[in-house]
Amino acid sequence: MKYEISRGTLAIVPNEKENSVVYEDEERYIVDDKPFKIMEDSCKYFGSTYEGRKESAKDILGAEYKVPIVVEDTENLVIFPTTSPYSDECVWISLKRLKKFEKVDSFNTKIIFDNNKEIIVPCSYRTIENQISRASRLDYILRMRKSR
Image (cartoon, rainbow, N blue to C red):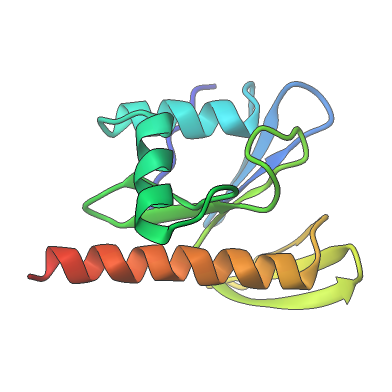
């Protein structure tokens, strides 16, 4: 199954094999690509490249690593990584769909989405907090630029 990120996307989670589990509003899909490949393909689908979107985010934020990606401009679909995007452990989370997050322990964080669906990601609370801050800043800057 081919998959493009949309408004309904909550998270893209690596699976044990060479595939991903994609969480949407009321669905859960197994996609035969790694999360990074889904990100690359979705960026292309919406008219850009992952590298181009990454470079733009780096320039806007002044950050060098783990930058959030604007997959699609008109909807401001901002997706952020929990680790290095190239890591097989990286989970991608939709900023707009995130409701809140809670510390599980030193190494895991519970993500609660706006539809009350929950996942636990292997990432510290502090890292998630930093990633949400970056993604929110990117979203805000782009919305301000569009409103001028």
